[in-house]
Amino acid sequence: MGLGYIGLPTAIIAAKHGIEVVGVDVNPKVVDMTNRGELHIIEPGLEELLQEVVNNGSLKASLTPEICDAYFMVVPTPFKGDHKPDISFVEAATRTVLPLLKEGDLYVIESTSPVGTTEKMKELIFTLRPELRDKIYIAYCPERVLPGNVIFELVNNDRVIGGIDEASTQKAVEFYSQFVKGALHRTNSKTAEMCKLTENSSRDVQIAFANELSLICDKAGINVWELIELANKHPRVNILQPGCGVGGHCIAVDPYFITAEYPEEAKTIALAREVNNYKSQWCAEKVRNEMLQFELKNGRKPNVAMMGLAFKPNIDDLRESPSKQIVMKVMQGCNNNNILVVEPNIETHSVFKLTDYKEAYSKADIIVMLTAHDQFKTLPYDDSKIILDFCGIYKK
Image: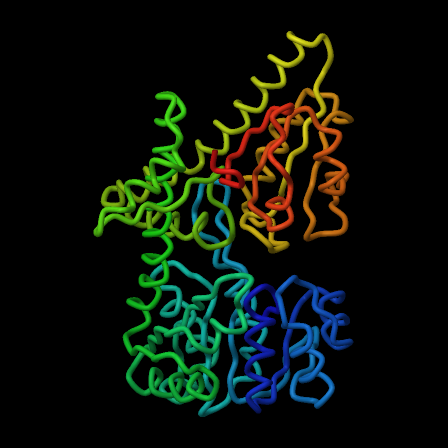
């Protein structure tokens, strides 16, 4: 259930390993493209696998589920305006498959979820289908993949699998062992849910430290990239690289699932979220200030190249992207004809008019590096331009 950035690759890899898969999505375009063997996301090497499994009949996409032996919820779990987690998509997907469930079936949630979600869905299922109590298997198994390296990581990464009981855990382990070469670690559903949130909250805290360092170094007149490189020479220090914030549907979202439920206890996690959110605001202000200084000095508005919209390098995923938020903030109250927006991994955008990266770099007076795409690393450092490098393209 769900053919997005995780659901579709998982469906493809499972089908590649001989499992008959029905991929379900509410978007007709996604279903049509999948059935034509066309990938609707950017992921190296995945389209060739998609074509293979579609052509041999192992995978087909549909707007509605069919009777199967195992059902996987791989749908979005966003947060609401007050940063409260929203599990309505998981519940909707569960209700959709509910009439199809039968004795012996496996039901798994892969969507990142607040602690207790699997138990809630268990109660929903058994309340509406009481005859299934103790007759189906229910588990939680979060993904652990890196966009851009999904094929390798879906197969080789360890997985944490937590059932509502030992039998459910074992049933889920048996399924994943068909295509996962990494170790399958057994636990209960609540621990597995918290494990996923903990992993991404830990990374958010580490990124916040690097981003906070970048703010300090900017005020102190210190090159943060050199500083981190030197500090990491210590055998027990491993500081991450700063950026313009934190994006994506995992690190920028998952910590809120903890802070919303445990606000008094999750002090460090909440503060890290504040730091990383502030970093994008700080970047936008730096750009606006440079634009103002340029106009005062030169008597005209500058051309500004905003380089990158994706939340991380070499992908097309714009979810929760700080780069996108920075571009929007910079464009507010400006003559947008002077703002050249670049994202080489997508062809069009519903809000921004996109410019080729080489053209934007050539025309711009101010270069703002937001996402460290490989294409940008081929561009020379031009001392005649004002370069704001928030993602370490040049590290100078």
